[in-house]
Length: 123
Image (tube, rainbow, N blue to C red; front, side, top):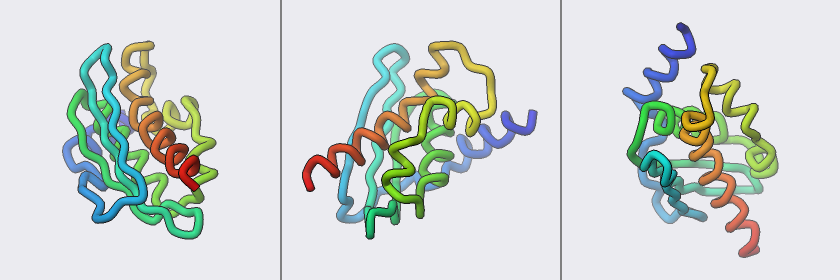
């Protein structure tokens, strides 16, 4: 029950639900199977994530996970964020999820990692 309360708290009071001024990367993706959309913008300083903001629409799991993930990653090295996996997200969310819900939970990780990789590719 505790995990469900934390998930609902992040959904009702999302952390980092904002726009970043002059972001180093900005990327948006859609989960076509359910219509969830997540956009993430970020600033990188000394190979660390100094700020992240997200916006989007969709189910509780996709939106709450974006809040949890951005909160978790601010201050971390880019390399650490790129090593986060499905298992890290499952642990963060703390709920048993079927394949459809898992796609919702993984959307923000996919978006963040694609943004970070696109930024690295430009360097």
